[in-house]
Length: 103
Length: 216
Image (cartoon, rainbow over all chains, first blue to last red; front, side, top):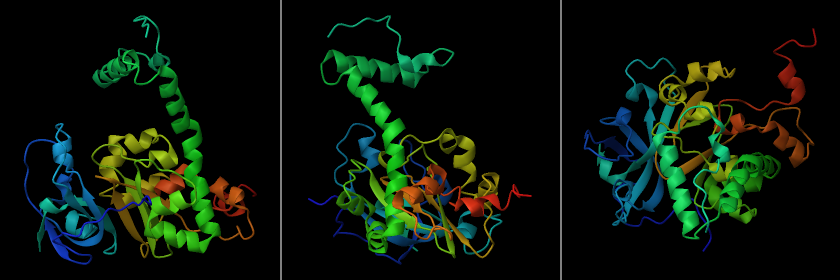
């Protein structure tokens, strides 16, 4: 098999360009969703694929079922109220599907 | 395997008592050695690779991308596949390459811990792991870049990439003027670690001398 940065994710809710919002949730435990983007709106930048759920892996489970991982891009001015740079600045990160809702 | 609990680990050269994670990692290594799963020599060799050989890989592969536009295109589409095609096995690292252009500058951080493309750049520098960098570069990237001596015009968009989950990132800087006809080896010499993380911009030597006015 050719190595690739990406894995297939045929069953997914979102596609590139979709507007999404990160869920406002603060459950205990190991989470990979940074708190600074919770409740913020962004767009799907790319689909990374399906990966074992890190929130399960962290506690010794097998991470199944796999979750779809997206890259989401946010306007810096959307993320930080007092952002001082220009409107065209972005921040991008990877968010698992179960943390996203349609905006 | 024989085991001497008093032998000195070379890693413990720093002053002060070992931290909790260091004790756990040492205990784990000793158990794995006792069970014959790995040897201290293998661990030492691995650390040597991370520190001496892997850091060269990033400069070489991006220099190749500068020299070969078709390879650069494939690198931007799927960096892990392009590296594999070029003979570079990134092991578990799933790599995304992001390209600087006259309109866009990219910079990489991991706010949650210190995720870093280790198979490509070796061990992360201390500043990359510092709380200061991790906390600030996401909210005031221009101020942080300025502290590294990198000043960007207001009409250049900054894309900050928080490598917070499964992917790793490398910046493909813009090839500077004055490097026409350079070999890949020469190109690699200006593609330093910091330029591949995005806190610095590679320059041809003559170009780099100008702002300091060293010639005056």
